[in-house]
Length: 93
Image (cartoon, rainbow, N blue to C red):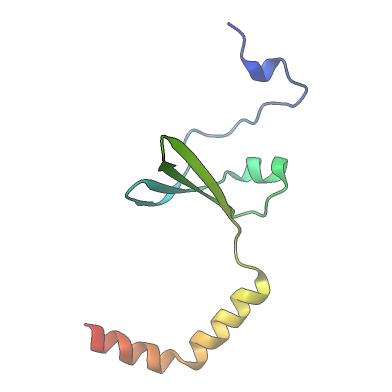
């Protein structure tokens, strides 16, 4: 029996079977989109997909990785307020 991908003009995407699961919460899985798929589909490297079982169906949403500007800003805020974060961590423990 022939695969449907053999009849299409696009080359099938070949990747390892180990798609990394980032998180599972109740009926939702967050998976890492393989790098090969990101290249073919034009997604940024590090894109995640959120799969949720709801109403006898699967809902999917893509989660784009944070931009370089956002990451730099986050690091600056953390560095500037690191002492406060450490103090809150001690109170929580």
